[in-house]
Image (tube, rainbow, N blue to C red; front, side, top):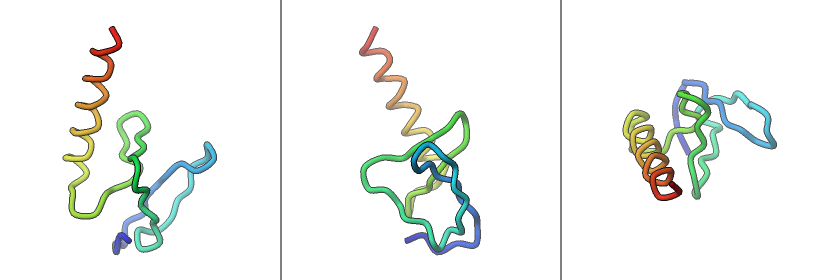
Amino acid sequence: MCRSAFDYYYITSKQYTKIHGYRLEIPRCYIIFLKDSLIVRKIGISCEVIKSLFFSFFYNTLMLIQ
């Protein structure tokens, strides 16, 4: 559980939900991004690192498809 005063946005049933960080349930399977905005933040990993890892994975996946 993320103990923070910041607000986070996450997607549930194709809708945005704004909640406080201390109430944020972090998904275990994946992290959802929309455009350039980070939707959820994993504990112990900075937003920038998560963003870089996600886009690196996404880019590599696209290269495999082509």
